[in-house]
Length: 374
Image (tube, rainbow, N blue to C red):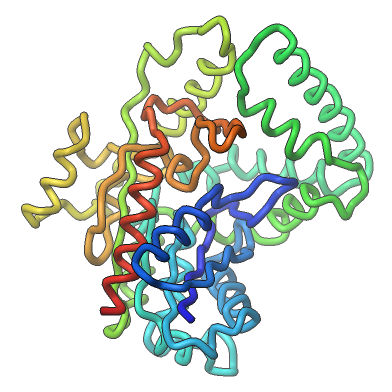
């Protein structure tokens, strides 16, 4: 049987409360593979949210071993964001992550390494977390979550937010990220140390090596020391979203949260759009690649990004496609209704991402997997 491993990115998880990182991806990808007559086991892997690429790659190796990957002949890896770097590290020729040497066995069975929205040449946004303000923000967060008084304080705050989420529904607000977070995380939150959210934050407090490694300068070194494996096809899918717009700041009576989340998006987009002069991104040289970028409704340059990662930084290997959507849209975190259930977007980027684009992206990824087996 074919195995496909879905690898989450920076701050990634499999489930947090009842939030799923790869929202509906397994179902859509599985159906698309079945249409290619491929019976695949799709594995959503656990990771270390902010750890170094090497430690995350070790965790990925352990998941593959635990799920019987060494007994299958066709392995495929799909990494979102930083997850794509974990895959490249695992498949590096001659790499030794563990003394057992299983890396080489896994790599020999791997057919494709597919990356989605991955910062192959780094993201300027990572620099925020390496400066004093970013470190202090994370320090305060982890201090609150890893101390008894801090957890109880946050628990009380969560009860207030849960009540606020109920109130905004009462006054006729549309389903939004506060409602979704309240229902899927806050409602289940307990002040005891073993709660999922506290364990997640505690993992962040233990290792924040990714903060430095995702900067353009560090990725320059990464790319010089992590070559591709010859027997593996490397395919990248690029996401890009429109620049912040005054239109998205307009308050809608039924959605008071839109201008707030768009302001967060605008800040992230601006930070991610800062270009490092010494470490530029590759420019599309192939006419076919340029044609894909020309399909976007805005001009693509070094500052264009998906709210987290510059679009040109996402190019690696063969370009599989360019998607109009933000960094979280592509893994199913966008506003839509599916089988009667309402799913909410994390950020209002103005991309107007919809189910048609979501389905096409993962169908195209399924086609890459199927093409490697012909």
